[in-house]
Length: 632
Image 1 (cartoon, rainbow, N blue to C red):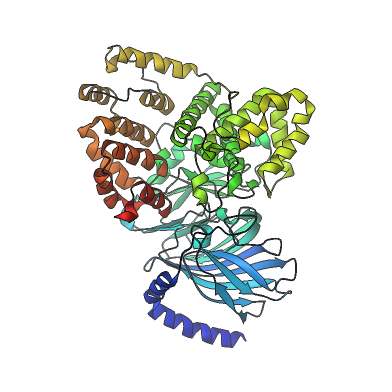
Image 2 (cartoon, rainbow, N blue to C red; image 1 turned 180 degrees about the vertical axis):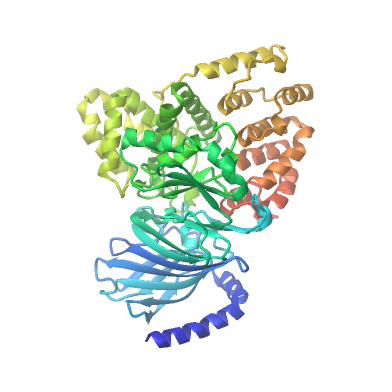
């Protein structure tokens, strides 16, 4: 059987290689996209884990930069709980060549159903009640949106191309056929072949040196959900920064990154002191090229980070604390589906704030908390206080789950947990959280399950606590409850005092700003008048050098303020920033400011046309919608 299989495989791959572009085009032309929501416990997955569920993945892959394709085999070990004759996988943007079952690689039939908007195509594989192994032979395409293939010119060193993935929320299915639901966990091994001069990394046990033959073996022995699958390939080097911490980056970025993140080990130690042992072995960070669409991604053992946090003064390292905190809230205890996203992010912002308090002090943590509150208020103003989008528990059926990844989950979730801490006392809440993480380690949690758990294990100890907090209003009602905690910052109050001096006529150069952190500068910039004269903007820029800042947070905040006031001096810098930086957090407010200044969108679209090829598909989707790009 194996000889026959190899013969058929050789012929089929030869034909596919000769006609691969035609095949991809044909697939795209024949796929009919519908928008009907699918029926499942997870509205964004076809999997039926109560019938058949994946348990382990063996992934073998070849990464080809010439064609920007991955050719791979996904060997799934499955558990057939009900004697089912079919197993369902999630796919989107993949070419499925053939599928086999069992240890002897027996061919089986499979079907790809028509594509459903956002969730992709259901891959139905015929199995027997005794089948425990399914192998899917497939290739990625240009529609595999998790993958971003960068040319060498798009990297820091400009010597090698680069590849990275972004699987959250439901993009793992675009590079590996899988049961793509956060409520389903599996272990994995992988063997990945890349060009000889390049290093491959995954969300797994990773190498620290380049392998001469370009072949890398990986192991993740702890069960993870599919959105935490990650791969990166490039000219990458490694340096340790602590007992079980280290940095990966392109060679020219390594020293700068190591200096910026030298406190990582202290962060890990502080996190363990709060909520128990770090269970993933090493905690490493990979600094990616600037097209990465997020600040960071909490892939187990290998956080992906944007280079925009390299400010030179450690002032933006709260992002590292955030991704580290996910090692408990999210990676260890995971939201059951994307309607429960606040369980990942609200807990993580709270935990991040506690880590930063441990490492840098309460004053610093309070500034971060108030920045979080400002972000929350901006989101509430944008959505409207009565919008269902402002609930913690969401209903995202029929929508892209990315729509739920807003400041509501992060910042409203944070203030909800801060209220619980203030109400029950920090000592009680810390003990509750530590027990919660241990009890549900490597499991998933629903919002309703969390409500039952906190009522039983914490709030039942004092009948006044539950009424003071009002869980239902915070979780299931829109807007921001009146009992939201109020946090004060002496450092921000001083910033406000200096800002008032400037508003009353004091020279910008006379303000006491010499020792301000990034957060103080953000507070200053966010509170500048909405309308400023050319003279005022020029004075501020001359005094503080905003337009020449190497700090992306400060630059983005300055651009948002001066674009509506037609500060022409900033236009080249705005163009350069938008073409170079792909972080969606910055792109969205800057493009919105450009649209507000020019409602025709001509200016914004002109920049976007040049910038779009540098953006990951996640950022492209958001900007396409904002700029009506597909209507051009």
